Length: 130
Image: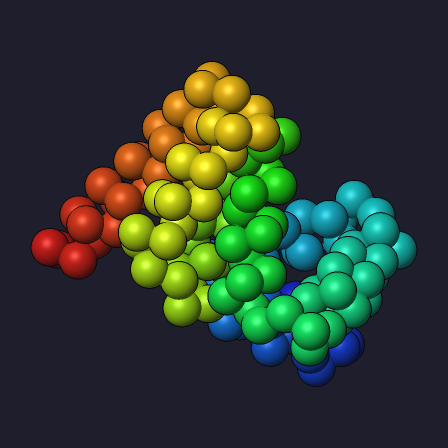
């Protein structure tokens, strides 16, 4: 993990738990471009919205996955599939969230999400077998 100073302890906890493969790297990249914007992401998203207690992290990640699926943001779909699993969601639950988006975004939206899901699951299966 890159050496990134995260001032907000709650934000650090969230990044370490849910986004270990991408969170620190993303914050480091953003910091090189614009430190103030990186700080906003850290404080508002990871230390603010993700620190709220009304929803548990599993539910919050499944909501995020639904949102990025609807937007067709493949890189973020991948990130939130992994974060959902890290937050305790099952593979079946992650798949179901993406499938449910057919109602709101149509078949192309759900199929795009399922393509990303298949890639992620194949990578995870390969890593487990290695």
